[in-house]
View: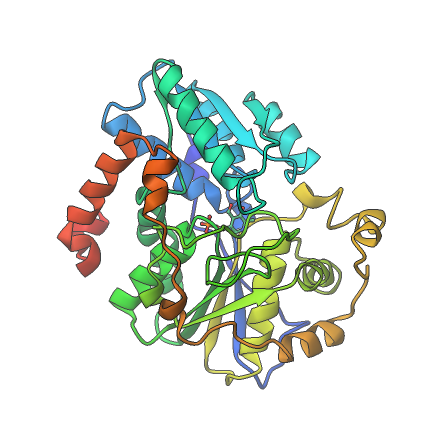
Length: 379
Ligand SMILES: Cc1ncc(COP(=O)(O)O)c(C=O)c1O
């Protein structure tokens, strides 16, 4: 018997895509994170950060969790808060969908919509600094700080990456993941470069984001992107990066719903498009694990709404052959990603990152066995 919903986090399935992946090319496996109880990959990091905070006495019974999140991480925290009895405050922005807002409120979270844009035209910095201010003001509060907390990537080092390698031990050739805080890509890449260094790691971002370098511009893909390279992501572990346009990401996600019966959000559409591109370069004995970070229900009013798609100037339908042709035409943004790293250590001071986060980071960095990946650390 399962004694708490939180025990069902992780151990998500790997799923083949027979209607889109040809027999004579690399085999794509979707790691389908929608099966987490909060509906996305973010349950893993949220659970890890909350558990570690409890263990350190940073989060006490009756406490408040405060976080800046475009949706999924906040939803995960709201679910965990509901299960464990914490008050949860989530700072979102106008790009957050009504479905996500309803889910946050459904789990009992308090939602603050931050409407002031930062100097890069996005909301990340304004959301983060307001969350930090609230954490200073509200007694008995804990700020997981997914963007600046190294425990975020450590969560994926310990769970997501280990599952991938355990389930795909011999013929894993490539892992593909989207990026925002760098938690999943950072943790997975560090683990695989330690235990299976021949596996190629590919990062996917939105055209308009600056994580892999380049200039910031507006984009519509929720959950991905940032104006800088996050500290959870070491670009030395990344072999190739791609940037996908909004329309391509949305159309690919829609095509997978129709042609494979697999619901996914736009960030996963971007990853799936890159996976189809890579598959066409590889042979059937080579496996490509593609992270599908969440399901599609939470984008019902945008991604799966024809009127909304048309308002954005996007096409509404593309068959799988059109998507495969689009995939073939993808070009890497970079094949030497480390040269484009855009880390911003100054933000730690200007955004007033909490001391508790900095202490945790020092601890994570000091664990020599993290970088060496010893089994002691993993347990
Ligand atoms: C749907 C979705 N995809 C991808 C990401 C990026 O993951 P990470 O923040 O671990 O880089 C997020 C993060 O919020 C997300 O919600």
